[in-house]
Image 1 (cartoon, one colour):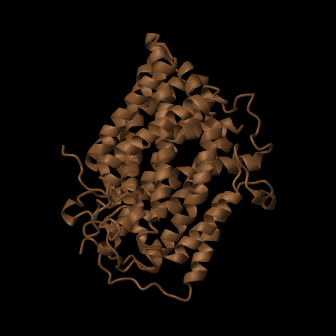
Image 2: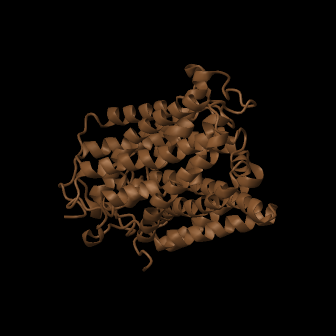
Length: 470
């Protein structure tokens, strides 16, 4: 299989041969991994029992999918990734906002996946073969997983699609076996040493809905276009792509997260997940758990790393996608070591997803509003101006920036960061919300309302309705 040559350039119509089924395969197969499963542990670590944990995950995921899934239709029309496509609303230079947001999201989730996957791999090897679990062993496992992930990401979309198809079936079987393996220890109550993280039920439930549920779909706000740019609007309708995206996100996120909640309660996992998960596993499940930790981590982190390479390629047009992928892989691996040796897992995960959700949500809202304003009509050639190191075009606006969209995102992000509540940082606006984290809602409303106000008197002047397929 040849290495993919495309970066963030426009995908030719002849190569747009994927369909809704492929989209579902990627969204399901790549997410059936410990990097997503571990988010099901978060509500338990916050002090929630079975049904409060399940309801918060489901509510947050459904809301997040409703906001995120329509973004898949943007790249269906432009045939390039979402951050580049956002240049139609932010300007061909302003699209760097999306690239940076996407890079940070993918960086964090890649590091998290390698971190938790590596810990479980080493834990199972220790139980099976008495492998030592010191710093040297952790280093070896992290580097090995990162190396396999780099290979998958460098080869690109086609290899990742094939891998996701295999993982969709294989990981589903492994999760079913996991339910059997942990069923005997399952309890509906959280560990006794985990009181409500925020002191009472509803604030903790809302935190769980955002940190464990909503954060999953929000992680895909810049990723969906990496896949739908390979889907042709000539062959597949927007409705079929939207339905596949919704179904893929719901199944791909809820199945592993609810498995995480089930195993966290069964393993009595309070402040740590990987250790109790391995320690309480039935002996016959250790080998399947090892396979799930290794293969699932490579599949998920591979897609995240692939997206990071595209985002860095968009930020530094002179870099090739392969070079950009290798650079971000090194950075992500460094974050894995920092996470393992310096950070508390619960605090790091919670703070990361809440902060990134706060700055990513207004970008997603503005991009969706822009897509509606232009009626899905784009000039794909004008979107590539920055990549060709040129000037001008329909999306040049003011020196490559669209001031209204940029200002609206900046306000939304600032409001989100000022109203967020994390174990490491609390925003000054929390006093107005009774200490409840409403950063997702407030950041999206602030950014969206300002963008609507600034653009109300100037209807979108969309280019002729032609796409990359035209």
